[in-house]
Amino acid sequence: MNRLTTGKVLFHVALLIGVIVSVFPFYWLVVMATGNESDIYAYPPRLIPGTNLMDNIQTVRDAVDLPMAFLNTVIVSVLTTALTLFFASLAGFTFAKFAFPGRGPLFVILLLTLALPSQLGTVPSFVIMSRLEWVGTLQALIVPGVAGAFGIFWMRQYSMGAIPNDLVDAGRVDGCNYWQLYTNVALPLLRPALAFLGIFTFITTWNDYFWPLIVLVNPEVMTLQVALSQLNGVYNTDYAAVMAGTLISTIPLVIIFILGARHIIGNIAAGALKG
Amino acid sequence: MATTELSTPAPSMASGTISRPTISSWTKFRQRYLAQYLSIAPFYILFLIFGLFPIAFAGYLAFQNWDGIAPMEYVGLNQFQYLVTDALFYESIVNTLIIWVISTIPMLALALVLAFMLNQSLRGKSIYRIAFFIPNVTSIVAIAIVFGSIFGNQFGLLNAFLQWAGADQVGWLTSDWGIKVAIASMVIWRWTGYNAIIYLAGLQAIPDDLYDAAKVDGAGTWNLFRDITIPLLRPVILFTVITSTIGGLQIFTESQILLNDSSGGPGNAGLTMVLYLYDQAFVQNQFGYGAAIGWGIFVVVIVFSLLNWRILNRAAD
Image 1 (cartoon, rainbow over the protein chains, first blue to last red):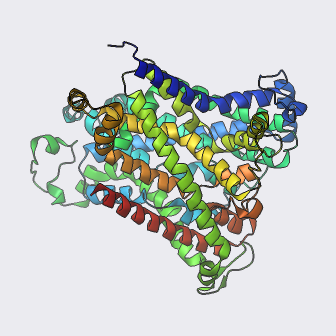
Image 2 (image 1 turned 30 degrees about the horizontal axis):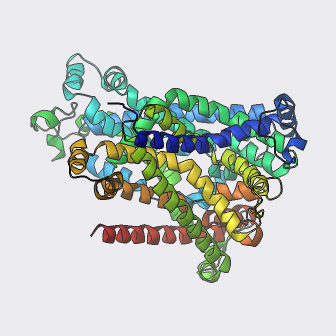
Image 3 (image 1 turned 90 degrees about the horizontal axis):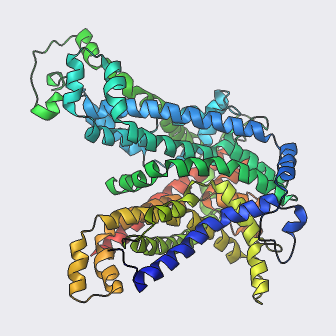
């Protein structure tokens, strides 16, 4: 079956070139982040990692409060993910398994909101945030998106297939109330869907830039992406330091992705084919 | 109607609707359905406040002149009148479309080829999939910073390579096409693997017998690709074209970070629609005009989604 034909060898060669192109920018990031300033301006450029990483990190820390930005990003990403998982699974389970007046129209409304372009509301959303006095605070990043339509849609689709009606009925007969049905029957069965939605939400929130840039006007409250952008803007004379900051902010996500790759890759494709 | 539905967990779906004597009192209704409505309420409440209200408010704001501090001043249709004659806005539309075309076409073509190769029962498929997908989880800010050092005019990696190869250096970040190519290359790098994974899933849904039958008839790899793969993959391709259009028309970060500028760099070559909105609203503090640009973007997105739809449908005939 797996005989290596000439065709397959050619495919492997082509795919490996693709892998190199995919991975090279990460390698280049490591090279730059571990070099020193003069390396950046050298010709021919230095193509192997250096030993200057710690110095560069120190330079970054003098320029922006990176630990604080890191902490803020973790807080926003963790809270957004946790709340999204809760609201999405509860609402998705309800839409999939319970009858109530207006269920159909309400679900159609939810789907329609997915088609609204977000840029249209950018300016007024900022105005609303400033009226709420949320500008420059982390809740401005967390609250608007925690009950997103995509997550609810995803959880509903998954609940329909994964939670047998008989099991919910049996739970009812055993005297479970609504909340117990959700925690004891639905949640254990929804675990694979929660894994995907969790990783997906975490990565998206971690990388979010446009809205945090607009709403985090206060230099004392920044997320990593905003801090990086500022570092790049103000500190562009010391490229090695900018690269060190970029490296630090990128590593956690790459690790999370590789650990959760199994959950995320298959589900992204499945979601696309369903939609 | 509604009162005949059961509040118990959907046995009605499995075994047909069972009628129950109706007691149409508010208490009964609340007992049956309150939990359901509470479960789904957070979405609708948050959408009203942070989704629908801003859009309605955008309609109001676009008729005002406002810097965000002084009282608003009603200016009627002035903002829109200015918008339709604003050369920079048109330039931002053209730039966005050029970047969209030179990124989407190579990206989807490459993704299709990658997926086709991955589908040939090769060893190490899961490793390839992870490697191709990693760019997609990287933040655009980080990518733009790294690509900035690859495309840098004087000390960039690409120009160093061109010099080594004896070719002329290119002013990537100062020339009109250089800037657009640099931005498009980031989009291609970040999204090719993602689209390849989606195509791969579509390919795996095509039955092997079709390929086997064609092979018996003496079809080569190219024929298999053209006559079986592409036609059967059309719905998946449609999906990727639509998502790439939505994403491509919203390009912002790539340009803003790469050029370190909210006006799109030299000659506004990297000025995209969303970057222009950001610049006018949040750098120049023209909130009313920013809201009007938001409506302009909305119209452009709708027009291009419809156009996309028509072209793809015609291609299908």
